[in-house]
Image 1 (cartoon, rainbow, N blue to C red):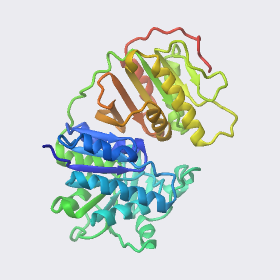
Image 2: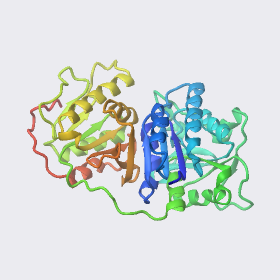
Image 3: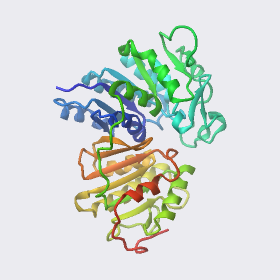
Image 4: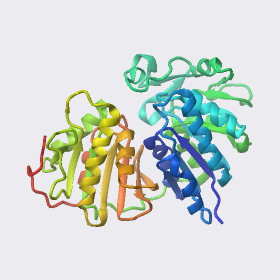
Length: 399
């Protein structure tokens, strides 16, 4: 019987996938359960062959502290059945969501000490003096610090935890003195700093709860599973594909613009358009929210996007093809509408961009991406490695 080596709890779907991907990229069998309500059934189905890495999305980022913490505690109770060797609480690198409440809930459930290290240096997220910075700018002075739907708490992390009665010592890389032996927050401006911080856990992994994002997950994956392995999934047969770009972040907008410039033959469907109906045929295309009335809630936009994704995929033979889903809410809505229970993560197509199979089906592929991640050419580069699709330009283009 296989064993679970790492359990990951994340507050949204793209976060769960981001944290799981570095393990899959190094050969670990990795599954992400897209909704907490499906976790118990998934664990029962896998009981004779547990994945080495199991991640679950609690879908709690936009909840109040109490309900968010309760969902994390529920996830911990379920995952405890798998007796994971290590626990990882995935948090947003810009601290959106109920970071403190959820982390403390898992700390209580596992009885472990906190190692808090949310830096993702590859994406410009660093921690200095226990405070998150984005591209060298303190979080409070960035657009991320003013997130309209889920504004992060601002200030040093040790101060935020102290308000809840938990003292975090500050750990600086290569600092003199012994490594921390109790709850701590780690500064990091590069991946080497994160590797140094991870040393705190190495001697007694059963006593620590790792709290971080893709940066810390990558370090843990390196220590447990070694070097990166080659991409195990071929995209050369993905004639059917849909780019569903729901995030309104500037980075996602730039990626979409470059995709449209490099592949003008791809039709564009607007999910909020009154004319947004299922096309007769869409082998390849782009789906965006569109302007709508301007009064739609984030939930309404996600539902509309999810409905359109399902309509397009329903026209693909046996649903086979590739979905590129940008934005956690949109990804969740689309996959739930498709009836997906879990994603078998195979690798990272690019840093911070996981590639997986829907419910383990090798013919149903998905790539997910948080809105603010990835190089501007990311979507265009993906389109260039895919086969040409038979398109009827303009037939259902709503752009």
